Length: 328
Image (cartoon, rainbow, N blue to C red; front, side, top):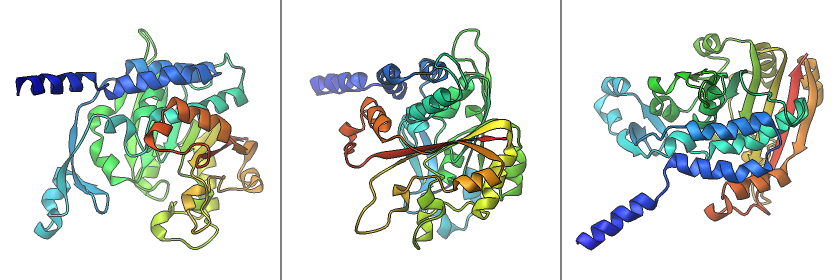
């Protein structure tokens, strides 16, 4: 029994922590990066703290979650749906969507499009992430001196992340500029309180794997649960994206997708922009990139993030598009 216990402890010690895993990913990604801002983003991984396990009152069937206060107000029959569910430390950075470093290629496209490779077009900016999905990349932005706001409708995120995860984030480097990080939960911009909290005046609005044509304007009728419900008509939503940006601010849409299937329509497989060139122009944007094919670069990123070892067929089942527009 003693030998078994020693072996078990040795196995636990050999398992890398979530932050150690991110550091290894950053090292593998670094040779593929061109821009100073993206390099700073990867360097900031070294300053991330490891976070322990947390418990959430969670309904695995519906993916719903409630706070302890909301749970106490529920009828007894409703309470039975929500079980105290532990989420390991890796969830803090990966949530349900994988490594936050999957943003790396999108940031490099931003940098190479807006400036020279030595320019840092990210640090110190005011950034809004629509459908943020996880705190990891937001924390990295904030540690580069950014004022970052993430908004999402997922009740699990709303109840997993805490007040202490937000506010002032120290600079990634000693003496580096601190940033601000705030998470908002609800349907932006149709939820008035969320709209007010988001405000305006952003340098950059970024959205990954949310604003897909298949989610927003699917080519055929699909189950409503397979759509992204903006809360507004698509062109009204586009006008709101323009409103929250400063003049000269940028909207960056980056979508990673599986291959379309012949037997059924998968909305998430259609990652092109949900808005046309003419619609962007009418909303007050200059179109810098529209549905740029990022498949090859995304496949390289996938190798660095070890996605093939996780069962992904990157050669046949991985596609990516990027759209970048600038408010006039």
